[in-house]
Length: 164
Picture 1 (cartoon, rainbow, N blue to C red):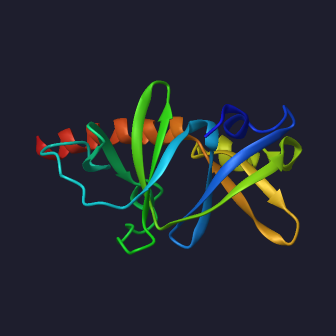
Picture 2 (picture 1 turned 30 degrees about the horizontal axis):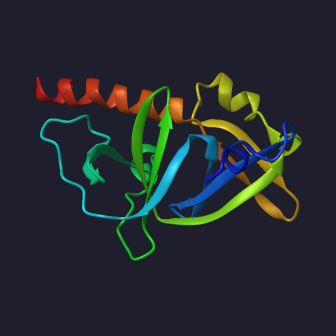
Picture 3 (picture 1 turned 180 degrees about the vertical axis):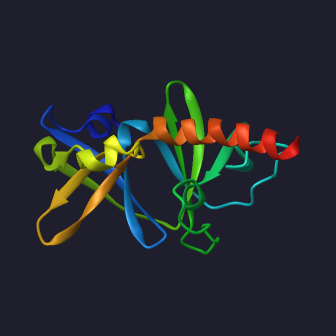
């Protein structure tokens, strides 16, 4: 994939990968997406954080996998022929995100992205980095990968507290 595609064709455009999770569209900035692969069985890690399902071997590299449905308090993603693992990277950390389906790559104007509503952010809602407004379609939430990793870290505390 060329860098021009990953970073959008201009400073005023953003390229998003759209994925279905629990019947809803979730977007991730493609600058954070390494690749999207077909679902494969995940090897569980004993005593791993609650949100880490396990690992996959992706061409010789072990990648931790998080079920995005569970992480977003939706239902667990049940593997089907359409299920995918989105291999994403942020802050030097690589994670696989299990999604129901890869839907589309969307190139949008940066002006179509808005901050999440203030009531939600003031109440501590950090899962969305932005919300994309689209004419004649429902808005798409742009996922904050930093929030997701923080949720994984918090699940470590929950796992250790439950074990005590």
